[in-house]
Image (cartoon, rainbow, N blue to C red):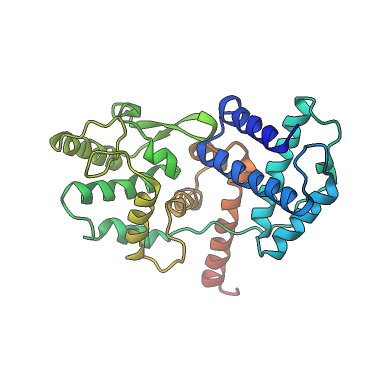
Length: 296
């Protein structure tokens, strides 16, 4: 069987049966296309049985020479492992060369977050206008900081998924996994006001947020809204929507929230993904000790 045919069937399996997100499928497709192009160009290999761990290691070495980071290479290797797992399940191959491939060491980066004072300044500022766009942009910032949801989750958040009576909303996360997130009274009031403003402007889109033309929001627009707003209150280099997700989790932990509760709120599959926020909290405790203890 040709490698490209196997990749095509693997992509269908990932999207339809594994229900991977569009973002994940796009990343898989990019990684595997890069690998198949390398084999075809460097070794003239197009069949799934014509290469082994040596060619795979050669590909990894070429990625390193091109300056690709360890984290990106690890993701590509993981994608290739998933492909091989699928091909063995289909009984297209017997051997698995991936058992001889090791992941490169990846240095753990602490999540970047916005300080609480900066968040207070953000929502106390007058940078948001009183028209539809200004109110929408302000609400986007409030929703991010008040729920910790992901970019795609915010874009596809639907009006019907907001329960004003119970002060909660339903989010469709990775692999179509639903979770319930409680919202504050302040955020609930802001959502109610925005729903009324939407109606006044004649917007009937199922999703909560929309453009001035009544179309669904797109990632670059949301990113620009968040980046511009954060630029006015913080000097941190990263000012993306995901930074507000990190900020939500870090502030919860710093104020005594249980780690397992934060895991459920963020929609993490494993607690290990949530534990990274404890490092920021430890650093904060060290700073408190350094500044406050008489013999520090």
